[in-house]
Amino acid sequence: MVALVAAPASAATADLSRTCGGVKTHYDAYSSRTLVYTQKTGTSCAGHAWVRVKTNGTWKKWIHNNSKATISNSTGNFEGSQHKSCETCTVKTL
Image 1: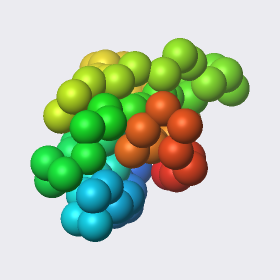
Image 2: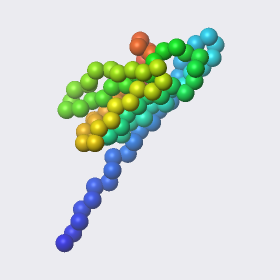
Image 3: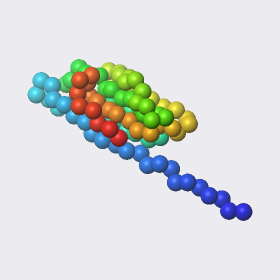
Image 4: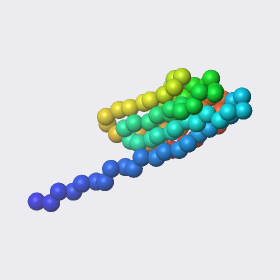
C-alpha cells in the first residue's frame, strides 16, 4: 500500500501601513486556505482592519473590526484574500 500525502498550501503574509497624524500604523495581513485576517498593530489611525475571501471563484463581502478582522473555516476552500487598512484604502490581494 502506498500513501500519498499532499503538501499543505503555504500561507501568505503582508504588511500594510498608513499614516495618521504623522504616525504610521501597521496592519498585518495573513492568508491560508482555512484562515485569513487583517490585524491593526498600531493606534494612531482610527480606521478598522478589513478583510474578505474568495471562494468558488467569487469574492465575498468585506468584514471589518476595530483591531482584527478574521474569517476562518475548516474546509480549506479559501482561494485568496483581500486586505485593507480602511474602508477606502488600497486593497492588498494575497
